[in-house]
Amino acid sequence: MYESRHQPPVSRGRFIRRLLGHLLVALILLLGSLGLGMLGYVRFEHLSWADAFVNAAMLLGGMGPVNPPQSLAGKIFAGCYALYAGLVFIVTAALLFTPVFHRLMHRVHWDDEP
Image: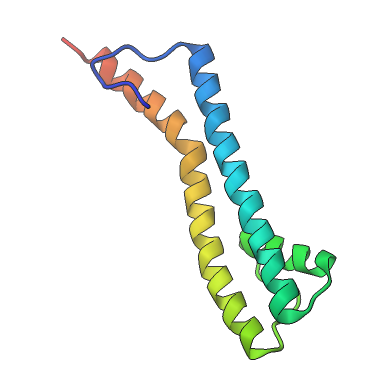
């Protein structure tokens, strides 16, 4: 997917397409994770879809749930979803920053070639 250090950096247009591809994967991951969280809150805590959206979005954003879980199943789901949301945050950040970091490092090392 990425060029080796012995190849020149890709063109600006191809780099933009790479960034957009990573952004698309990140959006799909976030939307799927949001849907999963909403389903869990509706199923285990019997929240409305709007309340389930707020709780899932807040956990994915790192803020924590708005409505504290009441049932045992809801508490277990919320705990597991919070751990999952933390990993999604890290993966999303990596997806978005990797192409930029790679291009920066590639340019630095490519210029050093003998």
